[in-house]
Length: 321
Image (cartoon, rainbow, N blue to C red; front, side, top):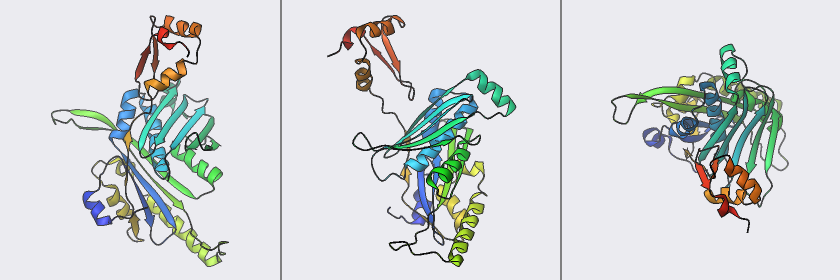
């Protein structure tokens, strides 16, 4: 991972739609800071979900940006929840080098009721994190039970149970008012931010050399200290459009030394294509296609769940080859 000058980043680095990897110099602790502006706003604005649903999906998008940006190969990193709660399903995808998309399935009445009573929107179910390098390789998937009311709480359980890596995650999603392009009025926009640290000791040697009791205690103290410092970050600071990620990381960890690496740019996008939709539809026979068309005025309409693009087809043009 190429290093960059912290001073250069402080002067010139972007504030929004980036993932900034970092390392605490005095410890074997690495982390990532995420700040999302347009990338999360465009996804949530397209769907116009109820506020509690948007916040959950915003958290999911922030987490997949954080984790997916660490991929060292072309591929997809996906988060999916399925549950019996008011929010039946969340899907958030990260495509290398830095494309985000997502959607949610929910029961509107149940969401309204739960929001008014502070009930858990996720309910009982499972969280799956999937890494997919394409058709030529086998997918990796980790699945854990949903635990907690937020995506951050679910992520903690995933890393503890599935990866067995000491991990601490903070995620924040906020709806803010900001001036329009002309500055004559204000508009509501979504923003998101997050920070994660992981305890990744580099012991060296093959096999790794044993750790002395004193070294282990020092590592535990360093981990606790880093976690306490990270917990001082407020939700407002995570999403603040005027606060550069590097400034925040310096204010948190400057006493222990913090090294930042090249930021990964993030944007919203989708991989749906008319050709892919057509390929799927051609697998149906003509009777099924005509039934689909009969429900929509003689034309088959397919809407992408992620970007809401609508594709229209004449069933006569979909005859199987």
